[in-house]
Image (cartoon, rainbow, N blue to C red):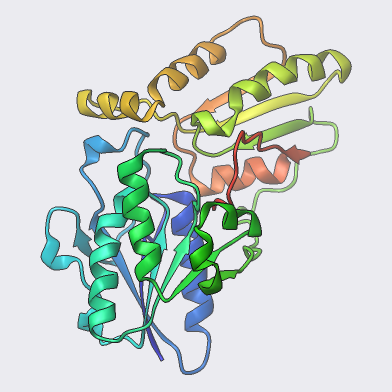
Length: 289
């Protein structure tokens, strides 16, 4: 069986890329399975992405380009199955075209929804994403709570497959027990992640539990260019980024550390290994990666 999978691979988008790397390795290890990993040459203009950029991996099939519709195809590999990883509104237009082609050629299609409830809530974006769900033969989500965001008429083709477990990549030793313990939040910092609520709640924790730190590590979505800043304002992330920046510079916070920016894999894994607990104070959740 030949599977053509479209996603990002490598370190650029930590959650989805890391997931896809692991999935590619696992599927390729199955006897009789040939997996073709197809990456994006460019998913959208760089100015449209309001977070800070990370490292860029080389050596993948970087073919699909947002401005070149003739690249929006996977049929050239003659796959038996097409598998699409969906995590952003930006993938919906490309995915819709690929799924339509799959139907015309009678190629079974699977779409994995990493964000069943879109972070950017808008009618046009929701319409695009629902069009992809209609066309796909199977839909994968990682938690049953994501079913609430999928129209009931498509529940019959939904499969709930929880995330797997992967070992951390760092060789750094665990910190000594005498080191000041800390609680860790990591990930992109956006309004629905609730980091501001966590910081506010931590002030009470800091009073009651002496000697424990809160560590916040991740990227702000504020835009790196003029157009990027405009995009962040439209998505509602610019004001939130400004708020978190202000908190990070506040002298009134007790035992809170901010590591703002892209966190490399080894450094992130070191932070995770050293944390006593990790915390994710999401204000809404639908089974994200």
